[in-house]
Length: 224
Picture 1 (cartoon, rainbow, N blue to C red):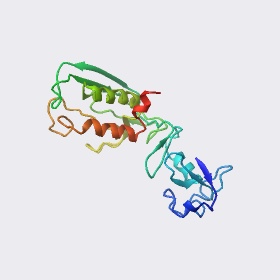
Picture 2: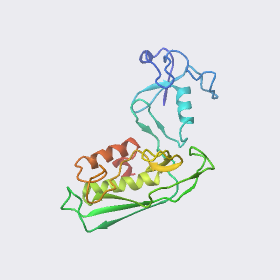
Picture 3: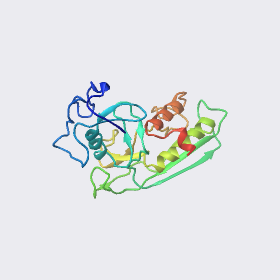
Picture 4: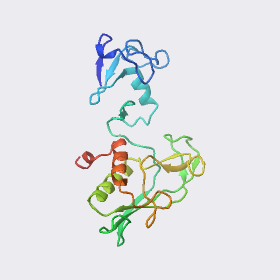
């Protein structure tokens, strides 16, 4: 983050965190204080160039997972390594000698996620309270081709960063304090697409790559 003083000409806009003008003090003045950060100081994010009050960026970070990462609220660019709040569990995968609809020339990768019920940690909505884990183990499917194998490798990274699942309220049942998917869609139907969670779906692999990228998991991750 680069610091700017008030006279920077690019600051004639609003801070989209507090909705105050960048040429005025942060809306968090008097609410949040941090040694060395004056409420009028403004920072510009290095890669995307979007500008915010430094105090607002600090407030946004404090309201998140505090995992060392920061996500630009305007363009969603991620700085640092984003991690999630997925509870402990197990991810396994193996090949099965059958093809998915639309991928008749490929075998199939089956991913098995298993998360047991447990007690919520400090990063969860209700620390100390029990959470449920319905429908586990969950089976998901990818074609065993070049792009499918790339998606698998990135899903492994996302799993290790605790980004595949979270604890929240189920969109299906309305149950709270339960394990739910976390914005990375999976195909859970094998031979059909009755629910929209199966194949054929020619755009799925590209869509899930975009969803992984939005969580900071990209091909560049595999080269680290």
